[in-house]
Image (cartoon, rainbow, N blue to C red; front, side, top):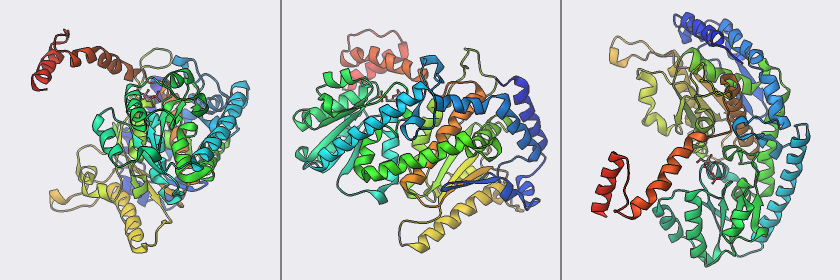
Length: 505
Ligand code: F6P
């Protein structure tokens, strides 16, 4: 486990480096661009514009052994109980490859393979049916991964089905979606690991009524009994397991809607791309390990330089949903202040993650990135080869991507204080050769591993999310008071708000 002195060392390096401009670090060393970059499969990653030098880098890599990262990676793949508070493994890697050893991993490989056969059979049945539209009903990890991948891989859609997503408990979402669909040609997949999530059950009930029964209702759940009690025939319930976290579940039957959009070969490509990244993470020495680099840069920015915010800036319209997906992956996994042993963390943990697609974001929040008081480290993501014929647009997109990262790092002087760009704003650049199921799988697996490694460095659990429970519990307690004005509520502010709501309903 890391101690206060490890974090102190990082802060001392950051203090030393506060006197060194990022543009000088970059400009004074022609070898830096090469030494701070890695290629893994379809991803080229450059960390050359992170605000660290060789000494800080050595201090960071010293954390790898001190925190036991190699053993932790092995434990993840082998199915050790890395989710300590729930006494479970987190075997998402077993959904896309067969790398782990040990009984838990082997069992998971077999279950995942059997589930894929069932997905293929249900896909075939739908292909043979008159269904044209699929509604994925789910929220959080049962929505964000498939939604991102369906959108990102639109160039790979077979065109056989249109895939829609219904998420919010706000009834206007259902109302607007269903207005444009024909119940005779629509099937719905209720995706919920627990099958106890309020939003999904309410929207699922709307779908069941609208479809006139449960004949074209499918489910993906770890709680088959609840799905069956909802009226879904066992033959149309695809499995999930407690050893897959919701936000790590795209690779399971949670990706069924994606498979219907891009076909089973496309889905297999996504898994293969992730599996290639898995093999890299498991087998590579820390200095050549992309996930280790990404994770160390994360803790450097958070704990060395003290940045409390992190931007994700995909320069590809198809990856516009990536920041939303990563918000759950990163902030639900790392938004903790207590370590696995119950003690308070010794260093700050998760930064606030946010972002948006370039170039659109340049015309909204980039002003703050360039001249705001708080530097925000950024992950820029680019795609080298476009999937369209508008070459002039693509060249403009790439030049904007390169320009923004350079401007943020180097800044620019001006006699006019308003026009001065301070620079020293660090960023990483992840460049995909092209956006395919394989490269998307690799990119998402990279972030998953980086998140896990950061959790090990901080000593926290990346796979539970106790923080979301209190609000759910209070919402359940308040529901009777929203329905009936005479129900007494203890909290005086909530009581006043309820009075206001009831007076205007
Ligand atoms: O409330 C948070 C959460 O539990 C997420 O972790 C999860 O992805 C989401 O709700 C949906 O849960 P389920 O798949 O069980 O409906």
